Amino acid sequence: MKRIKLADMTWMEFDARVRDENPIVLLPVGSTEQHGPHLPLSTDVILPEAVSMLVAEALGAIVMPAVPFGYKSQPKTGGGNHFPGTISLDASTLIAVLRDVVNELARHGVRKVVLMDGHMENQWFITEAIDLALRDQRREGITDLRVVKLGYWEFINAETEAVLFPDGLLSWALEHAAVMETSVMLHLRPDLVRADAIPNNPPADFPLYDIFPFDLAPIPPDGVLSSPASATAEKGRHVLGQVVPDIVSALGKAFA
Ligand code: ZN
Ligand code: MN
Image (cartoon, rainbow, N blue to C red; front, side):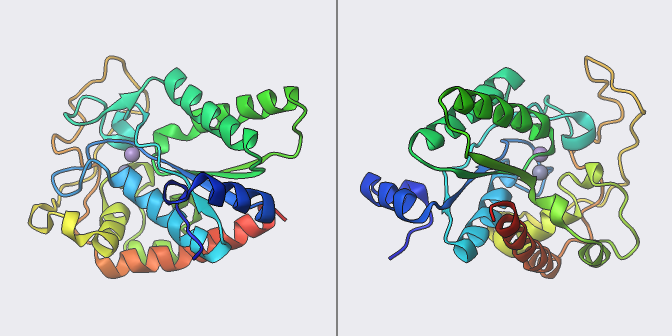
């Protein structure tokens, strides 16, 4: 039986897979972050992990244990770092963790790595970690390591966008704990969605600048940046049905 999760393999199984198949290894990178009154703190872990598992099934790839912490939640994309239960890393810590993990995979012979982001605030720190790990590897004489970075939501195409937002998309940044995440969670983990607590508030209205410390006034007190009221499990199923095959074909090209 071919296992998908690295954590379920023995060291010998992992070693044989790496040597025989040169497999793609996916690392979901999430966050532990408030997602309103209706979604769990692990939403940004569950979603990239689920996408990674489905992609790996199609590709014969391996999925690493997800990194459960991300960069600090920002008001305009995650509600802000002040919400209880939001447990974040300093940028330097996140970069160091991801750099080490990519270097460890390379040390064991993996040459195709995917960092699957589930939390918008992580993006440039993932880029930095990959850049530093590639530099480390070049100094070791390893020049054939390839690392792909992607945010699964970036694969949502115009057709799926129209299914999610028949009245038009406001902005992806304001989609925090809103229609897309709530829909995919209703599809994947309805047991974790507090359906009777799904709010219907107007979108947050932020200034064009960032002020530090955060001005709490424009941040919706429930942490939801635009209304998830139109979320459905069917929309969630549609998102995965489009995004997963598109990521599979993109990775096929990236590692060709
Ligand atoms: Zn999220
Ligand atoms: Mn997030």
